[in-house]
Length: 162
Image (tube, rainbow, N blue to C red):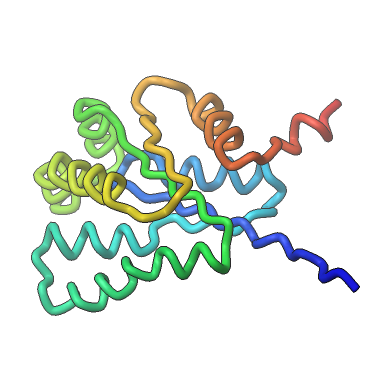
């Protein structure tokens, strides 16, 4: 008797600094795939990057434990890490539009360093399937198409509208 091979559930992890496009891409991807794969907007990488930026040394051992378990997570899920980035001028413009007051000041003083930390996280992550996705110059639909292709998903809205 042969055993059935179960397909691992797909897990898409979106990481990146503020205003890199995570939430907008998350919403469009979920709609396009009919909410099929599990998608997380900010996960372990965000904790690691923010702890590093804000020098939260008390949490570093906790995050190191989580980081080392990327391999274990891949035993359970078919993991796709997507780190979003954007040109400094684009990030600054997005922050100026979206944030106000103290939040704007904090975001404007942090975004360059945070983006660099997320780049470092991307390079050192142990996930096998990962993509650094620049959201600076292409429309959201093109970025969505690139994410769908990377994760081997189909935009069901195109199929159902025919």
